[in-house]
Length: 393
Ligand SMILES: Cc1ncc(COP(=O)(O)O)c(C=O)c1O
Image 1: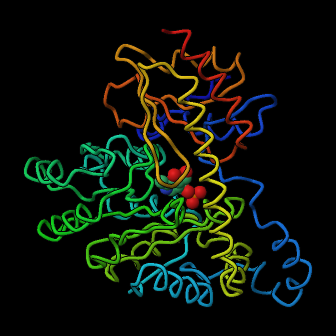
Image 2: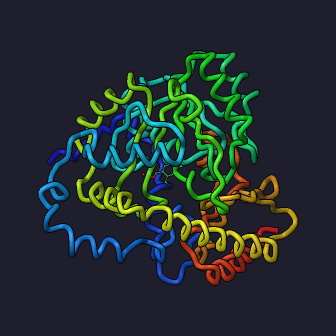
């Protein structure tokens, strides 16, 4: 018998398993996990889902349990568009529903990227986006960023050299993985540059609504809907158990994304759209967001206290004003990936920083998520983390 000769496509060979490792760490027994960007399960609106399913599904089953149009249910798109208008002050020119934020990124890649095309990203940035861009064989170039987000001078320099990038990917609010918050001044500078260069900006607003104090800065999409496509998700503010997100952007682009979705899962699940529509229509989102902001603020306070107590002076970390993450930097020469076995023994999980750096050779960083653990668990988890990181001192 001839042995199976699995001739993988170039794009499948060499892709890392970091994301699967993160997803599988959820619920590992005895483990305090700071690894995944998971929302707090105790604030999932489970009662609403239960009541809605029991009381309302009967009358809505023909829609909620059926296939939906590729661009999403018209009634949900209308509710979603009016929420975007209310919270960002811009009525979307065009908007489609996606199966989570990550699918919106995939559709953008599928639509715009040929192998070798240049994509600009902040460094470090969201692993899922790096995986999506490299899966489409893009050339990823990094642009410097600090606690005020992407540096427009560095962006101008990147735009002045090399082939014109197909897109710039940026997470302006409470960034994954650093928690950085793009300053208002830089937002204006960034969209001015994009307009000058005819550059498409992909704005990922996954954590936008989760500022601890509820503060917001203008979305890039509200400043320049002509050159920005906004990718959003309900995963962080409602629940990731139904995969639900959106893409809002220039009317010249969205129909191409809808076409690409026909070549993907064809439509986002009707059940999730129906649930989210009911949730928004009933006006429940503001109270949910208030609960989420308070929970994450308390968790960050616990993590900040724990890191201060347990980490040595050679470690520093970012101080987010919202979102799920802090980014820890250790002494040069430290390789945080080599600490994983010891972390496992100690019962604490984190994500080594290297893969977030998009191919740059940086190993002394790590990401901690404080979103899915209680303040008590965070206190104990940071104590364990101190043991793991201290062992290398
Ligand atoms: C910045 C960012 N964008 C998008 C996503 C994807 O979210 P989902 O596909 O669950 O909607 C995540 C999830 O971790 C994220 O951190």
